[in-house]
Length: 324
Image 1: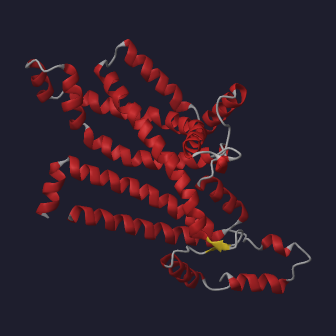
Image 2 (image 1 turned 90 degrees about the vertical axis):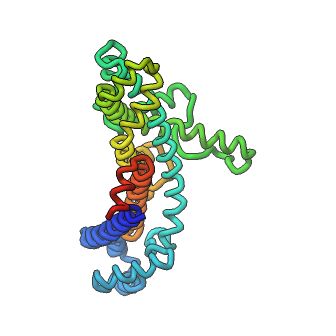
Image 3 (image 1 turned 45 degrees about the vertical axis):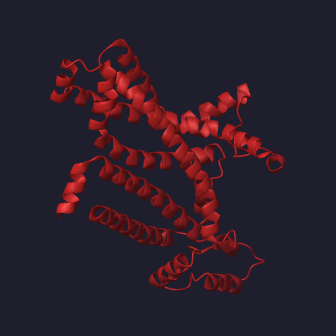
């Protein structure tokens, strides 16, 4: 339990540090949301000054941060200048869509990388292994933007998949099954782009971890006792290589999250990415802060989940934490 509480404390400290730095950097960035209003002759300086006072921008930076923390406690996370509403409800809807994309891509990428990496490690140096290594190396050098644009071009020319958004026109009139089918069809392109962008790294780590374990003495001894190779791979080798792969799982969530923001913008997926880009361009201060904090929360949550898996999978961690 101490191990879990310590990890949770580290996560909370990280979130607090990110909130302070994000608030500081966004507040010190040049320009504000009201700069364009000053160029409008129909809006007087008194109106702009009143708006700045209404949103608390005329107060010192530490006091503004305290007010923002108070709004965070009340579930608002500040007030959006552009949408004229609390930030939290805006972000929750977009974060749900981003999570749907990220979780689906993470599970699918690992479902492919684990058996493929294990199969390739068993055939290390042979032709299938070399072909897989070459294919993943080619995917690794393709930028995420080029990959997403290539998939969009393929979808436009073939007409097989929707080319943007999360739902079709008339989505509300569809039956529940057809709604689910429509969302799934719209997810194909962004999920494919995310899986292809992260699969090479996951495959190479799984392959390297399994290849190292295959030379371990206990596996060679088990092989000498006539245990089938498939049983050795999936019942003994894969659990023995689990620790670095579980740590990589938490890191892959962060990779997919950062990649999903770009994919969402390119493919018009209504997640955090387009909202965050729009807020940055409009200098909507509290939406930017909230979007970055939500992204950090997902990243920290993924790593915390990986720590929980490590605690469950490795009895040495439980023994060390209980001994302290």
